[in-house]
Length: 287
Image (cartoon, rainbow, N blue to C red):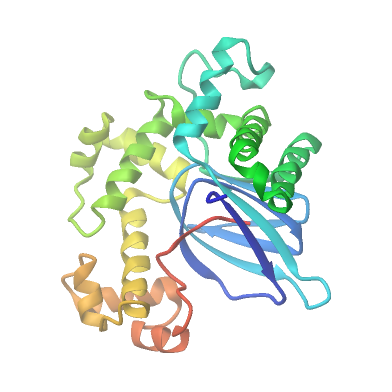
């Protein structure tokens, strides 16, 4: 199951900076912490995190031991699968909160932590049990993934997923802006051009973007650039100057200054202490 990710960790970890996919993540044992901009989200056993669009985030495991390791799972959310499930609501499916609004609602933060319902836990457990019956995966996995999405959509925070799928909603336009930024992070950013591209005024884009991501478009672009620069230095073994230039920085001193502000130390020192596993720039699934 390509969209399913499992995590086991026997000790707490330092913060890992990642480009987070839209996903559903559940903690089975232990505890984890996420940071989005200046905001912190803690979740433990029985809690889930729902990320509704691509976000540069930091995460760490805060509760784990050899006796009681951190156990978690994550499910990447495929936008087309989400639209397929939403499409059935107008065909007699769904109930109550599941029905989308007649008019776009105000946007909400793109990440939320909540207690998993019994129905959501049941659907997730049945999905995980397919790992013991691989012959059932081709037929049953798509159906159970759809059930998990359905449980998320009809849950208390389903609107955060529905708003991304509504073509004219502010959240959907923010998602389009994010998609453009992810593909063009190394290019100079003019807010007025980005606003025109997604069909919003500059003030509306700035307000709605920060509401959804906890960052301004400029701050979002900066984090994308710095995450990618770190990946280039760690994985591609680029030197500091080349990595900064590759992600759009013209000034080495500005690059080093902003890098140290995000990662806590200058690039050379940070990369020297982090050689080994890929810690930055790689998209991951929370769990």
